[in-house]
Amino acid sequence: MLLAYAQLSLQAFASIFAPLFGQRGWRLSALFKQMVNIGVASMPTVALANFLLGIVLAMQGAGQFEKLGATDLVAALVTFSILREIGPLITAVIVIGRSGSSITAELGTMKVEEEIEALDVMGIDPVKYLVVPRLLAMLLMMPVLTVLGEGVGLFAGWLISVTSLHLDPIFYIHNATAAVEQKDLWTGLLKALMFGGVVGTVCCFYGMQVEGGAEGVGKATTKAVVTSLTAMLAMDALLTTLIYFI
Amino acid sequence: MSETKHKSPYAVEVRGLSRSFGPRKILADVSFQLKHGEILTIMGGSGCGKSTLLRHIIGSLKPDSGEIYIDGTETTKLDDEEFSKVRKRFGMLFQTGALFNSMTVGENVALPILESSDVAPHIADLVVKLKLELVGLTGFENLKPAQISGGMKKRVAMARALALDPDLLFCDEPTSGLDPVMTSVIDTLTVDLTRKLGMSAIVVTHDMTSAFRIATQMVFLFEGRVVATGTPEEIKANPNPILQQFINGYADGPIPLKLSKDDYLKRLLQS
Ligand SMILES: Nc1ncnc2c1ncn2[C@@H]1O[C@H](COP(=O)(O)OP(=O)(O)OP(=O)(O)O)[C@@H](O)[C@H]1O
Ligand SMILES: [Mg+2]
Image (cartoon, rainbow over all chains, first blue to last red; front, top):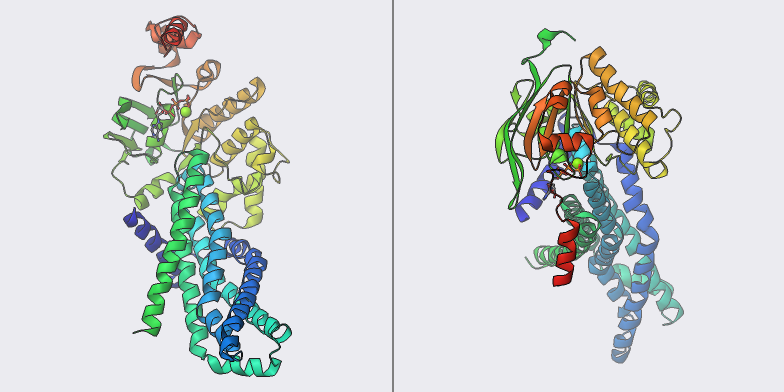
């Protein structure tokens, strides 16, 4: 199982880089279609989730810091946690639920309807044809969505602090920028890229594995979502350790 | 197509093919040959292993034992890359059609053309129109598979299988679900392509009229074994009672129903 997953992932990444070595290029139209499916269509949900979390973070922070008489720290807390952790994480969760599951369901349905076998017989490599555009779209869109989500989350934190918590709008921004470094942004985006790779490979893998009709598709989709979430969180822990504690 | 192009006198040769799924033996020692330019029909009851046999020949499944030769090349031992070269000459119509549901009819037929070489899109369009015309589906290019009938799907699948003018055509029940006129059109098409273009074909079918109309060779399977092979005349004259029952479609005969009416009543009363 793990071996088959590793094999598919290797094959997919090899196919992604193959055009650099003079092989036939990526299918741009298929890639754009997947970027729209995975990325653009997820934007409203990602924005909404980050917006709400930005608000929650600011309010929870304010509640705690108020006791210490340090509500100014709200700006630091919101900015710091959204860039480093919450932004990439919640974006990945949304993408797994929305796009990851649909990748598995779509590939799985193609598998049980013999479409993948038909591709094989036509001499079309299903990995190049189906997996690569989806994986590549995940790798590209996860960071893009994360940036969008982080932007919205930061704005939400600022908005609630200014309107309900009566913090000074300019002073908030000043505090916020002082609390973080550029590194925080980059590491967040690196996480997003890695999450994209994990989610893309896991969901494609489960889709291509499906056996046994509609029931099989349902089971595989559940497994893909659970595995993606777990693997994503493990990856997060690993990257956080590597980046900040070593 | 000249005879010298071929490496072997047989387009397809199957020797001693066996395959089990778990404890169930689905194919047992199946052997037959198909000469170039001929049509072989595989017949037999539902569930006797016809589709499974075809899947082995096109390389989707690997046998437990036995060999398959495609124009003299043993294919069961080829790796994926080598096999994909052999497959370039295949056209396959799946029993369920296996059309790509996310694409239109036209895109389905165009796919193998566009993928096999750098054909200009307008040339591919032209070929698509031609192939759809062959199966009587002019003007349906822009519909999705979900918007056409079962019989139409079969015919689109046929057009797609023929898209690259294959040397070897495999059809899994191409005419099931078609009306008699369309059945005849597809049969004539298959025969014409083999006679005129030298294509060879293996056709799985239940339809005896259709089988006797197109076949030059017949293989009859029963519970995973070859019971009879021969020309249509030989098959008709074959006294094997299983074969005769099948050809003539009698309800009574040696072909066991898995559960007879009496059995059913008995079991019902026991439980
Ligand atoms: N992947 C599989 N796993 C387990 N058993 C299988 C598998 N594929 C086919 N079988 C079994 O093999 C037997 C033959 O199936 P096959 O599809 O080849 O029949 P068939 O002759 O094409 O029947 P039909 O005329 O109804 O299409 C069936 O009993 C089926 O249960
Ligand atoms: Mg079948």
